Amino acid sequence: MYILGIESSFDETAISVINESKQVLSSRLFSQIELHEMYYGVIPELAAREHVNKILPLLYSTLQDARISINDIDLIAVTRGPGLIGSLMVGVLTAEMISKALNINIIGVNHVLAHGFAFLADSNITEQDIFPLLSVVISGGHSEILLFQEDLSFERLGETQDDAAGEAFDKIAKILSLPYPGGPHLSKAAEQGNDSSFLFPNVKTKNDLDFSFSGLKTDMKRKIDAIIESKANINDFIPDLSASFQRKVVDYIMQNINKAAARYEHKEIVVGGGVASNKLLRAKCKDQNIICTEPSLCTDNATMIAVLGLMMHNRGINTELSINPSLNTI
Ligand code: KG4
Ligand code: ZN
Image (cartoon, rainbow, N blue to C red; front, side):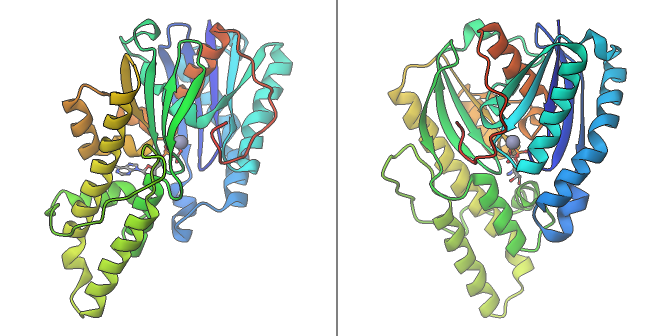
């Protein structure tokens, strides 16, 4: 059985083919970073147009790389949300076109939930060994702790009340004039810095498994403004500022993961999403035997869409295919 994954929710066009054992035959991606970097953010209309330009050539090259024909595909899994409406439409319409032409099923997949199952691709960890699963998705748009049962029903234990972790990294990096998207650059700068140079207040939320990153971001901005006002060269402070901020964010994420783990029965914990490629977060997770999604599967990709689509198909879950651009997970 071959499953075609299609992802176009934001600024990456991605296509993947996996088999029924979740082995990846081919996974390709076209990133729009160059298109949007001059705006330091994604321009929705430009993103949608670029998806239109790239999706079919990418489909052909992915099938070629997988050494299969489009007629061999048995099931299509496509991101139905959350994301930018124009971008989502390109993926969903492409999926509908293929489904009609080949008379095969489409499963609409939630992008955020899919981040939490990417680790099962090409892995020797099997589905039988993971539930109940604490899934921690830390990305540019979401920061969530979810508890999944075997039938894929889930409870959201915590989520961000304002900025997502990746968003906070990106906004701070922008203030520091680091390249777009800022998270990886800030984390690189942090490697040369002292992580106890700057201190941050502890964050409080009503539900103590929720996240809130905007206070940390504002505090960081105050620190940066104070340095600039003192006429010191801000560039000299970037490594220490980055290291201190990164440490605070990572400690905060770990603290919430540990609280959730202590309260809820689970077999495994996994971290996924773009920020899960952060080296410090990975090191802390590995110390605690938390599964870290492979870096190449942390940031947006179509393999994770195919994996969750297949899991839904195997359980007879069939979502309605209406596009859901809502920023909420469900
Ligand atoms: O999951 P993703 O590719 O897209 C969303 O669904 O949001 O996550 C992208 C986010 C960006 O905010 C990016 O700055 C952040 O992940 N990111 C990182 C690192 N690599 C990517 N943040 C911190 N450290 C990293 N190494
Ligand atoms: Zn994502």
